[in-house]
Length: 158
Image 1 (tube, rainbow, N blue to C red):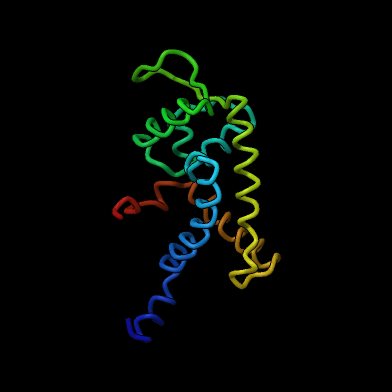
Image 2 (cartoon, rainbow, N blue to C red):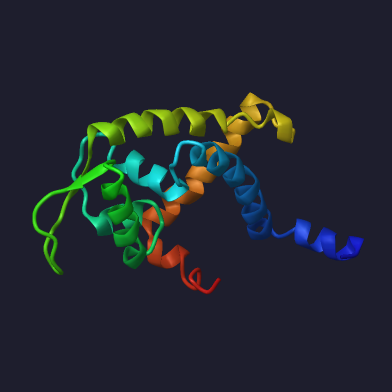
């Protein structure tokens, strides 16, 4: 890739966001993997942290995963003893998911790892800059959550 192309890509916010996401995501993913927790599992545990019983579809929306993929994630987490699903599972029936005691302990460990990954000094940002970057990302995420159809059109075409 020549310098002109690189400069052109440097101007593309989406491209840079994906690259940064992969760099930071790799850090948190590696730390979580050491404890047998995946990034999506961390998202699920976090969604259930306040004791709420959420459905598979509600969790999928919260962690930006397709509902069809969530059943497999939840099956694995239930086998690990991290979550418990209430009621009899059948199509069209509400089947709320809750954390188990093991899930709460796994979340505590995962959260410590995740928060440690906020330190981006090795990537050239001080604490205030890292906090500002997180605030900006949250602004975009909240806008996408408030109007998902408007902001995700065509996003599934990876």
